[in-house]
Length: 81
Image 1 (cartoon, helix red, strand yellow):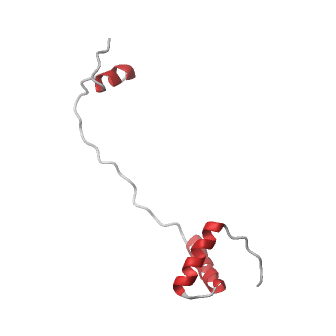
Image 2 (spheres, rainbow, N blue to C red):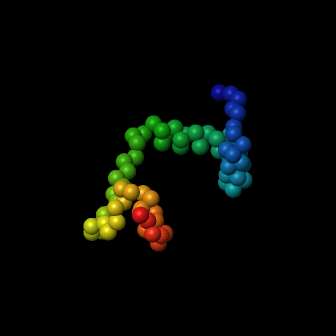
Image 3 (cartoon, rainbow, N blue to C red):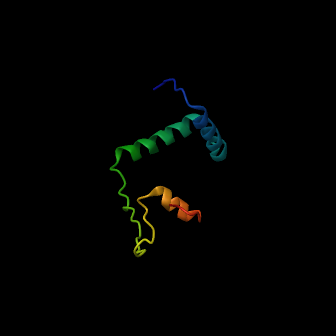
């Protein structure tokens, strides 16, 4: 099949680098890349391990963080009243 593709500049640069590195023709490289991409896109999505944030008890806060101005003043070692 013959068709015309408009390839973005950043993709064209990557293709040219790979073509030179692997010493293959552009047609062969694009067909291989399309096959790999279609295979990945056609398969089931990869399952990822859920991200978990480790927690720890910091104890009771010694300043009231509901009042932002007061918390910032304390952090910057200013007197706030």
